[in-house]
Amino acid sequence: MNKGIWYAAGAYFIWGLFPIYWKWLQTVPALQLIGHRIGWSFILLFVLLLATRQWRAFRAVAFEWRTMRIYALAAALVSINWLVYVWAVNTGYVIESSLGYFINPLVSVLLGVIFLRERLRPWLWLPLGLATLGVVIVAFAYGFFPWISVVLALSFGLYGLVKKKAPLGAFHGLTLETGIAFTPALLYLVYVDIIGQGAFLHVDPVSNLLMIGAGVVTTVPLLLFSSATQRIPLSMIGILQYITPTLQFLLGLFVYKELFNTGQLIGFAFVWMALIIFSVEGFVARNASRQPVPSSAD
Image 1 (cartoon, rainbow, N blue to C red):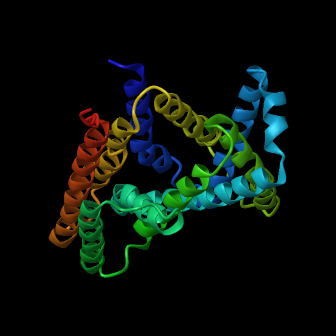
Image 2: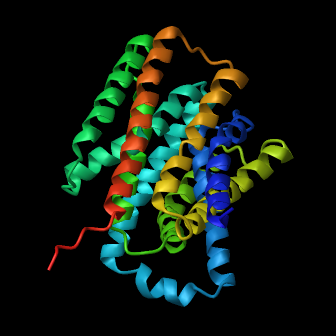
């Protein structure tokens, strides 16, 4: 089997198990966890940058004003995504979080139409409509608007939109993003420690190690994903990406025993139906585009 498939599956499998990791740190405030996730990720990436002797190449392109602006926006969006996700997981909304990542591919398509003026193939309106209906049904089932799902889908969709125009590769880009967010994250962690509310080095050794490990669990799947995208078609990436929300959904339902009533099931069913149509339509469209165009007779 192609190594790229294993890399992609590994990345999505790790992301799918993230709720377990953050649940182990449930006693630590979400904002502090994000501070550590940003801080230790940057430290690890910076060490890798130096170890692979890429610092000079990175410095030559990273500190241009336009590049810094793009990655500052990317850093803000991914920080919002991380914060909402970790908070949601640790307050018992794993299933609602999974919905955000189920609808994310459809949100990305819609953002491409709005901001990049991409043409939407006629059949894609159907899954977009079904997914929207599914979210509305879930909202009625919950009794409130599923803002966690929508914020996660929008923030990650916008993050992808920004990265589409970003000039750096995945490794250099992630290093710059976390580097931009590193200073405010560090200042916040120092502040909460000074006022006596910091968790790091004030909790059990295992929790301290898990906070440091947040950098590893953030960086490893991203590097696997980056390697995968260089080896396998995006169509395969698109299929494998559903590993993550599926695992999160199953964890929320069977491990953490979150509420999941009939109304929510109906809403999710509409979203899953939308994703099936979306995937099949994309597969058919890509195959059609590969068909050779008949040459005209002389």
